[in-house]
Length: 167
Length: 388
Image 1 (cartoon, rainbow over the protein chains, first blue to last red):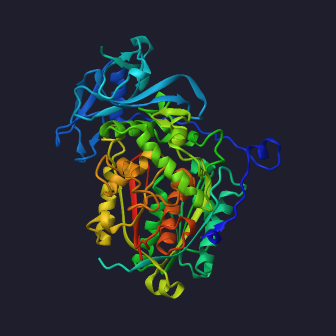
Image 2 (image 1 turned 30 degrees about the vertical axis):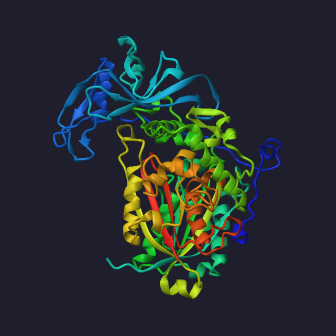
Image 3 (image 1 turned 180 degrees about the horizontal axis):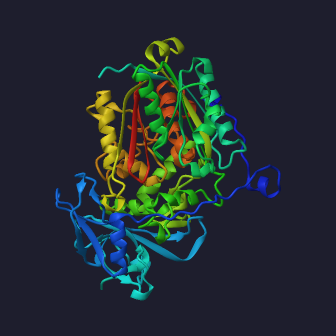
């Protein structure tokens, strides 16, 4: 099938650095202001108050987090916010040594999916782990939220700095 | 539902490279013209065009497919865009299929193109926006996170080691040596090389991941009466399926791709496949990361849950094994220009089933193959079954 492959041309970094090829550059000009919405708006307000909340689906009975205005499985409105604990269990995690542009981080980040206590089984949220030796992190580890002090909270997911081991 | 039979009758592609001198539009033309030439058709014979391309943010060009359209032969014709993230390559072939199966068109040109290199300093900058803009992005995520989190969930559930999974990367990068368009073929790569490569986001290391790539692939799809005239070796589309899971990805069991299973079941049912492990002779599952090949083989019901790694270690998935997997070299070896990568898998089945894969040819005259892609927010499965 070799004859069906076009003999495309490839460039090296050097071709750019030494100006052997012509190119044009541009930077996007765009800023966004997103409405948090009905369900996540309340979620953020509760975070500011130092609480995690989920929502209840009247059809399947599950308690869902992050909160949502409707249960995507049953496609009916959820019927109320439910207080959750600020503890949970690590469902999965990574130890990340690079930034989005592949620059090495001095201290690795430990992103994790954490199933929140008080919500239905498997209801995880994405957050970070801290105050823990990366090598000691395990799936199944019990963790607790470390909150920013009230005066520093702004109604954002980062009002929780990270989760740390319970023990 | 009455459906017309649809065949793939031609295929062509560009080389897959880290950075092409060609523009996106030029790459699209190179692949499209090669595909038409391969079946001795011209643009005049094409009734409609399907264009697959993933995020516009890579090119920084809004309405990217309209920008690409002249390179895809779309001028003056009905054109539709296929776009389901990484699942796009297979999905655009599915769209080509239903354009023809519906009876609306006799001959359709399907072109998938991706030029990732334009996005500076790294195309991951464009990928960050897949994370939830309010509840996730403030945590400073990067695209590797979702793969690392899923890989860890998969490894832990089934007690797999990094070594078990690295075998996939070695197999595919070695297979790619025989692909004339490959970016990363390596005849000497070993498991130790993968295990010793830079740790990016544990458990993901550098050689667990497919590269950033520029490239394009095109196929020509035709109704039976056209296909029989154009070629004596049509490759029939026997089944298609696609399925989307919830975008609440942190609420899902990441160790198993249920949406791939649903898509596979839809395609197998259409193809009359009741025993996929006996009836499928080649698989080209989506392998942007080595563990994903295993994950997807299980979702495709070709191995029991957690058992694809063992099959890999036994050599079953080698080109001369009982079920050759990614004989092309896959995304890990040939390269990963997002949408084009998965259409490359469809083209690979086309060449393999016609016995035209050259040094990559799977022995034993395979009669049926499955190609699968994955994408969106780790939630879409797209599946196509081809046969002769």
